[in-house]
Image (cartoon, rainbow over all chains, first blue to last red; front, side, top):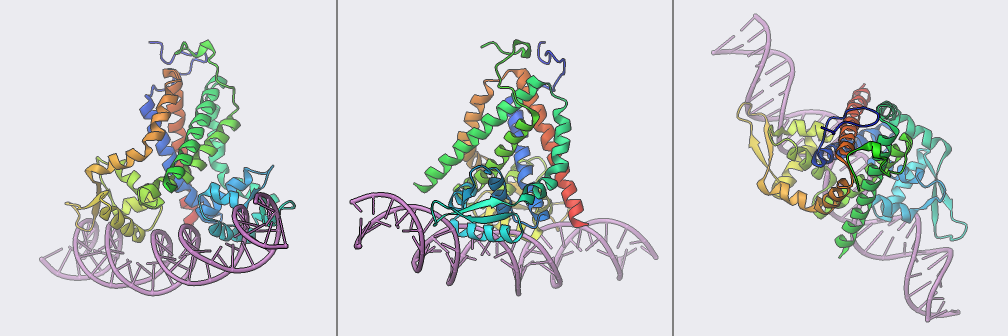
Length: 166
Length: 166
DNA sequence: AGTAGATCTCTTAGATGCTAAGGGGATTTT
DNA sequence: AAAATCCCCTTAGCATCTAAGAGATCTACT
């Protein structure tokens, strides 16, 4: 049987798409609960942590309060509270938009990234060890699939929102 | 397109472990927000939806209310409310444990799986199309990695909780 | 058997953080 | 300029969580 025969010679336990999908579900479900625990450890709630993630991911073009609301899937009223909490906890800063004085840009403070990363580190470190078991080709497969799955999820989310409003 | 031999140099865009990890982060972050939208569409909140997921995943040995609380990361007091809502929405049923009358087993109703799956279907269908682009070897790699990453996440969550209590 | 302690779910009170609706200032359009 | 729109914030009200404890049941020990 040719399955398992690859250049690097590493045999992976065979899996059907359905099994891989189930594994993805478990990973996501566990992540959901873990977010809760991680947020708590940082003195935040899940919405706040989600927002910090979005803010850190938009360093080049800081998000406005409204954009953050859309990405986090909450109202702008809620974002006011989120940013207040994150600001007094020293994670972010409100910065007036020079071009439009109605807008508020939310920028991460210097220490924010490190403080967040510190909590995720034990997990990331061990995940790095796992990656060491995969060949460049295999990592390309993983990166490719994760990117595509993420794209599908984004599309799907947008559709849910469109239909939800209608 | 010829599949089945990674030696054939399939044209996956090369990716570093860090890039794959970033893709995972985006997938998880999007999933987190999507859960919110999915739950809303089902008339539930995120906690309720998380719990339905756990209940559906434990068909063989129905969870007790307490076990569900641990898995969902909430108190037993909250679970009472969750199960009340899920019960009146027709997703689950309380079933007294024959061996221990303090316990309540939460079992899914017949239609629950279908009702939940209906909402996820558009996403799953498209993900199935993506899987069709991968060889059995590659799917084995994906399944393997997703399983290991999920395992690490579970371990990490357990550690967070241990240290969180201490 | 009988009793003390542990375990399990549910109740209650209080806290948290969300939505919905609307206000006031800034910007854009007519 | 005036009108309409946009953006963030405020407020009131609601949903749902935690913490603490009650009541019922189970287990272990004498």
